[in-house]
Length: 318
Image (cartoon, rainbow, N blue to C red; front, top):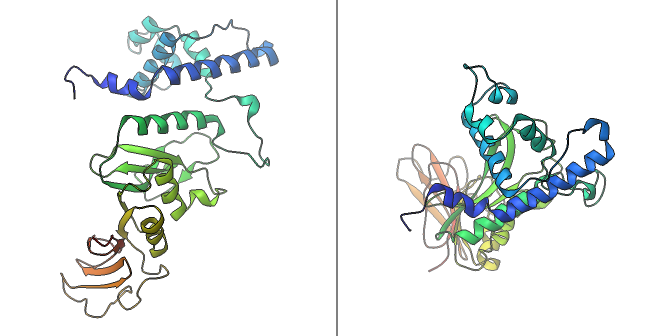
């Protein structure tokens, strides 16, 4: 890696001119539409933002995430106790507020309404999500070991697909499925969970298949690791036979297709730490290993991977 590269150079690989031009186009269109439809509420003169101005706008937004104040107006305060000189030097308060008011990522005039077969609760941010997923894949090729898991984007505002997950560090937010490189945590693909009315493509094993397909990693011999939410013999068989992907993961004992003699709460012969049993069917191997408590794994044979939770793994025959 060239030594003269800075974090800003890498940031611009993703937050580039293509994205900014799209944001400017949609923001300008929405501003003109609002001024036309609601002139009394939008009296301030509007000027289409430039690339430089949008960079400045987002720079101020990022700075606000570091230096937090109770209200946006305080960043332009002249009070010596509250003032943030950078903001006033960069952009006027009214111009910042105006861009924030009209900021858009998609064409709101084309948005399908609830009840429409094409309705998508993520419509307003879909172009943004598509841009980043494309950039993630263009700029990096992941190592052999990858993983699919869920993550929570902290958020307490008003959005219909906001989730509450009490076991997460951030209990309120937007849930996302993520495919990432196990070695360095680089995100290769993000799929936002649209809420309880989600289609099957956003649930269970379909999430794993979708992430692999959208990341263009099918048929390339990757090794996928999952937790017990996703792991099942059915999924791992499909990945091995149809996706050219090896898989390993912890598993819930009540999944269909598991050998019941070892995949149970008290498997025979598993009493002391280090005790292990396994069963093989075709390319799949299920194993249970005793750590502080039983560990269940599943894999396509010959590698057996142990975990400190109940699980299943599937590893390919070498």
